[in-house]
Image 1 (tube, rainbow, N blue to C red):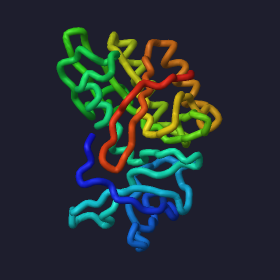
Image 2: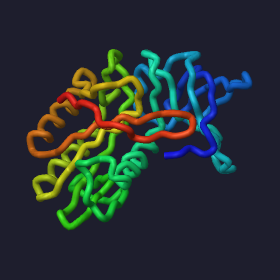
Image 3: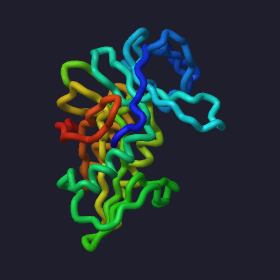
Image 4: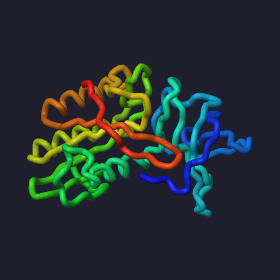
Length: 234
């Protein structure tokens, strides 16, 4: 995913009221921008650390800037814009980058499905059938090459797992895809200490046939794209 124009550099100052972040621009001005992340952003709120943001020319927006990349407590880059992962994963699938998800002719986004009134991030369709792909953004840097999900309790995430289980029971493929927007990582695991219910539900989902993939994204001010699979520890 090419980013045009390129992201702008700044220094992260603080996040507050969940959706607001104060940064210092390269010109030394302190501005407030939008934080497009509903999680805790644990280990991703380091004061005076390098960050990058985008600017919108939409006059209807209250805040022109959007926080895109921050520096974690362990010095790695973390992509915190949760609007990007679905596009990154779709782009990788369309480029035949992910071997497990090749061979589908049609990709649809945000399709309604399930008994709990969910929307699947990506629905892949082909002669072999349907594959339901739920995408999760991973930014919880735990150091020593380790990343975890989630960074906060996610009842919505557990609901999505239940929906995926139901799709497998109905005869379809179902995939949980961890989009790891985090540099310096070698493996991904579940933060059972943060959300034990999610961890238990994921174990149940895997036992019933839900597949799990984890891929790392390369992050820069000019582009963000998935580059390689990571070891998934469950």
